[in-house]
Image (tube, rainbow, N blue to C red):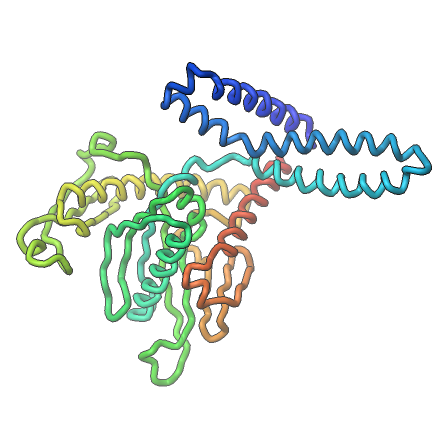
Length: 359
């Protein structure tokens, strides 16, 4: 392990000890705000410090075993134990390096999920419905809440567009690599010749910013339109202009919300989504610049990139960034997507580690 990394870890260990002492100080434990802040700071470094302590203990054990190697009677046993310790040390170092990687400050945020039908007509709209259910089921598996922002139905079981908010710890961090073009290959129910059709849907995952209000945005750049909501909602939707459309004129970004009966609530949801979209555009630019520099396969933020194919005749899902194929399409579309998401995160971490080592 590099000396510079060892110094950083030693500093983190000292910081953890200092925070631990503060957290046991009666004058601080009575201040809820201060206590919460310190607990958060401590929890962010706790795991890597614990691993660093274990790493140092194993190093000391190896040092002791090297002394025993000079003893003829103990040599064989010491050598065997030393090899075992070195393997543990190597695994621990890899884990520590991942823990030291720069954190994306947005990972812990709630997220907005936007699904849009692409090429393929009704079949593309049905595929959006499949993805909508997949992400909804994944949210359920993680005990996250979902809140519908916008929904445009298209035919039986299909949607032209769906926007929802996913409320739960690390929802953005877990789902962020899902942004891009998803492709489906299957025989549509309406296909009498049994031919396989290819359709697409675009997925966008955006982090929710904290407590966005009108004062946080330049409202002079935003056109606000209200109109009568359509769809379910009884007589109310025909009587009041509760639906809200916001247009950010500098970027041309348009968002709508009509899911609530209250215009005020619809506007608040639309503002939150608009701010997320504006922020996401800037985030994409930065990610793409970084990706160009390091030729990244994961996390470019490019919405036009074809990232995954769902092939029903072969029962497979192939992620083109990872060159990874899974043969569990039914379970996958039922929200069992952890293996894919974990692989994407591991690939991203590997790219970042490679970048650090090259520098």
